[in-house]
Amino acid sequence: MDAGLDGFGGWTGVSAPSTGFFYLEEIDGRWWFIDPEGHGFISVGVNHVQQNPDAPVFQKVYKGDMEAWGEADFAYLKECGFNSIYWTSGKRNTDACRKQHFPFAVVINLIHHPVSRREKPRPDVFSDEFESLCSSVADKVVPDYKDDPLALGYMYAGAPFTEMHDWLNDIFALPEDSPGKLELVRILREIHANDIGSLNELYASEFGSFDELLRPGALRFNADFDPLARMREGLRVVADEQLRDFDALCGAVAGRLGLLAKKHIGERDPNHLILGPSVKEYNMSMAMWDALAPHVDLLAPQHNELVDLHELYSRIGKPILISDENVGMVPHPGQHHGRLIKGQRERGEIYEHMLRLNLGYPFVVGAEMCGGVHDNIKELNPNYSKNGLKDAETDQPHEEAVSRMVKANAKIYDYAAHPLEKSELARLKSEHQDRWRKALLPGLWPTYLAFVM
Picture (tube, rainbow, N blue to C red):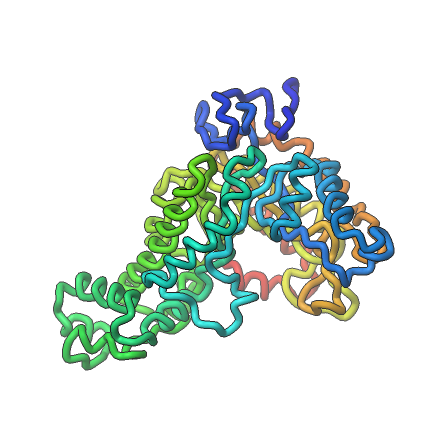
């Protein structure tokens, strides 16, 4: 394309007022980040860039210098045509980004990721204690970034709405006077017009009044209520009216989290975007999207799989960032789990197609790849595999994957400037699933289908 890139990686072919910070703007039917110099920007990055001191390259290549390793990682991402990082891994990441003049999102962990949460109960987001937590975390993190032009905005939770039935059960297990429980019971009372008989008939229960729902554990939900369960054709067992109740309660939780995050971040930083939580789209009902939307500047489903992006955009009207797209993992010897694919070439091809598909939507302002610069180390974590750009022992690139990623990244603004028709996007999405089918190791496609279809 004729136009070039500015100092932030923005495309000079699109111009808008410069504010000194990133913001979002729809221009001629296409949504863009507008970078601090006033040019169109589409965010394409690699998440989870972590420098693990136990990785062999730490000593072999970087001689135990963590700072040098971090700077080298982000310099390499720029060399490969990536232009930002959405899911940063702490201040070490953002310091390295600043030295490389590399745009980044600021991560504020208000809700623990499911991997780190384990069996811990999730918080009562309606409580004073949770609001105090939001305030204290914002006090700690925001001042370091509020004047930084490299910051895209704030992401405040990763996959927070996984297994929402458990979160509601955690709240219903709290003491009777807990703010969250009082609010959820109020919502049920309102839905059922203060008629406990209506609720009893729906759930085959025998409560004497709505006040009895305040007893710890009086009402419980199971995994059949979660959005993912209802996406599996032929397996839906929950009545529509029960899903209505469940979605209203989940929406209240999602909306409250969004409200508090926006309040406590926004009060301390009026300059930057609220990027919201990175959510697994199959954990979200439309009621949850509706409740979250007023409190975020964009929507951030992790994948373009179990979501109709056109339907979501038509309903909410805000731009979308694909926030943690999977392009497959190549197994270590003897490994057999997850989205394991045949090789690095297939990984690169999936990335190429993923980027073309996602940037074809006129309301998608970025696509972030789940991975890392270096592979996860099998000995340190057997549940991970070769999902980086480089080998963690030799520091050598996975050339068959990386060369294709570099080629695709060179077309970011060509793709963005020429959005596709809805019918063409549907065709590409179907082709993308077919590409996955062919790339997965033998026997894994049915497992993949069970997960995403």
